[in-house]
Image (cartoon, rainbow, N blue to C red; front, side, top):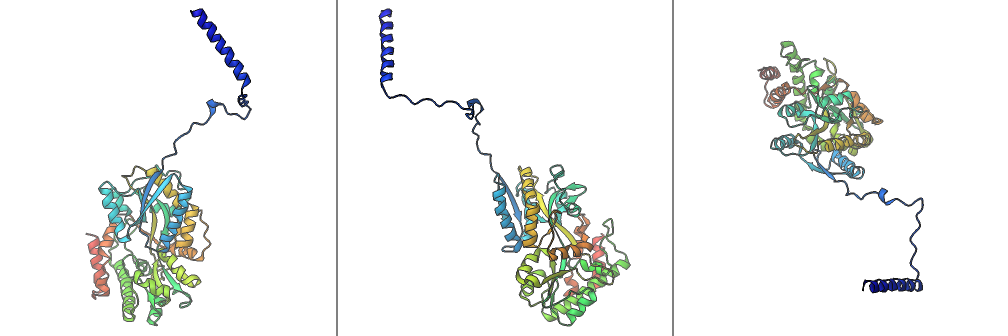
Length: 411
């Protein structure tokens, strides 16, 4: 039986071969060439890399030159950094620090945010910003020493610097061909009827203390409360009161917000404000816009508070390294060039070529600025020297107000 079965199978195989020979020829298998890739060496298909989300907050005003420039920068970032999805939330400047600190303290908050170093010292002490010293080691060589100092506290790095800022004297050359060089010149200008929008307040008018030789802190950040120094600070406050009363009598703006429209529309000749407003001023005034330092006085050059804007990082974030990479992109040469040209930022990155006379003018004005300290004592300054309305509006003698300020700050 087995023999018959084998014979039958053999016959079937022979028949099938005969039929194959009579049918349509089969397509020949391709001949391997030198270009053929060995199957064992073919690349293995992999899933696309996971896109990492990085969220940040900013406080640039709606429709401002800063916000528009940032939006343009983020459009380019989406092309250059497809591995990241960058989520952005605008928070009003008056709320940004409190909201950030509150959210972080509750375990939330964004991966990072950009702001002036106004509250850096307090945030470090509260533990709401991350120490990034090791994570950025060797990565900040292009950033100026001054700007890096603004991101440091007690020898550790807490941010990536973006720009420098301080209050300066902006003027419209059609209405004021030359800026006043001295405090006497400024007072005479205003007494003569030239409309000037001075920004009165404990941040904006700090620079005038230096003009009269007054100091708030010594080299160790102790309040300089001796009588001789108090007399100089009193002289500065009395001078500011004189200008304030001239402004009131003429109905001129007395802060940067109220002065924005009159200055850009050409109804006031000058305004004191920081360079964060330069983009808006230049858009309105073009080549008529010029900048100069706060006027010097009998005590020497003015010394406005120098701040540093930078990116700070949330200690709760699981994406700190990714956030740092995004921040480094947003502060690289191209990014800071864009923010310089379109928003008036004075770059922290030293690889940016400064050709704009306004930016150079700002750098010149910053030469005598006072580096904003991050010490706890600064809080006592804000708490005791920001009530100038008591002098300007309520009529408290400047000497009494200054004495009370130093007394309260040194308790």
